Image (cartoon, rainbow over all chains, first blue to last red; front, side, top):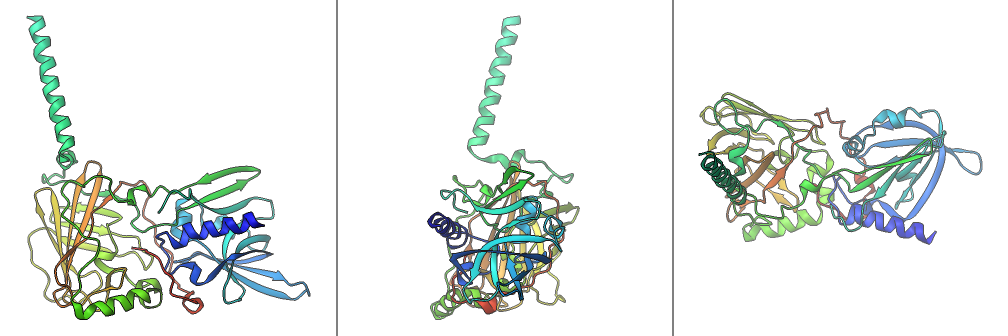
Length: 135
Length: 273
């Protein structure tokens, strides 16, 4: 767990604080870097939009009621250049997926997607680059 | 006779090699760049994407097989050596004293006040180097991929003057001419209150931008100078950007729908372009 927190701290430090990104603000203004969490549910929507792609999940709470989670992630221009197209995610619409992310500071059902695992076990994960390499 | 021929040939080769080496050292690579039919350097082609991308590695797992993919953005790093042909540059523009507080306020609140953060058009020069250049007799066509959309610029190079009937715009009105191996683009007629750079660099409708583009070997170099006598104490020349050729074809940019503004809990922000 401690490793995970360190990982996420380094990740966001490299990614957002020191970096130059095609987004508009530092996600530290929106997301809590120490609150990495996991949500499993049905992928319902994938919006391939700037400045961040967005995915929606319908998940069940412990009491059985449903809640809709929204995750943003890297910009579409980044996904395109690492070889990921919208359909690589959208093909799983209607299926159960697991998303790991960082939680929005305002406590809403909102997060930054860091990893998505599909029903077949395949996954896409965002990793920080070498800490020595500044963008 | 045969030995004399070999000697002369070897000497010529050495001299030629020396010239080539000297040429490289003095950085006259532009002279070796491809040329268009009219004899000017050929700037046409697809050039690397101009916007910073996250320095993030994609880890992909498919059927138990793991692969990673990294984006090479090394070309965006500052040149380790002086760029041949570049003008002297400074890190930041110099505003008149009465505007410095405004610049600081804009910078401090950039994540809330910068129109570009909310899908606004970056304009010239903030959009950076073109993604594709089409070089035609008498005009250049610059194509861009941008978060706000995919603008184009058609820039006469036939000696005509600026249009007098054009409406002010984010990308201004451009005309260009050649100065040696450098294409010099003169841009005027901007909308007021845009930002020509992060850091709260606002401008007025008096902004005048000069872009310079030239070849450095296989690469394109782009450098811009901004003048705005209403707010700056002197023209500002930013550092040159050396842009690699690219095989990545242009693609329509997805729509821009900003949705984080109401979630910002502080003013943290970062450089974009």
